[in-house]
Length: 62
Image (cartoon, rainbow, N blue to C red; front, side, top):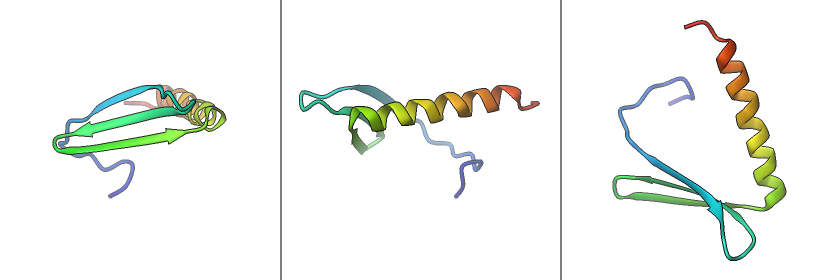
């Protein structure tokens, strides 16, 4: 499975700060729950990667 492989899976993504000073990405899909905690500087790097990917995707012809 790669990043371009489509799947028929519905998931919920929540993003927010924890009481421990981390940034949590929480993914829920059916019975599966994945909490992913990041230091604030790591979260900023991830945000930059998401923005870069969005800009590249926006330039892609459909």
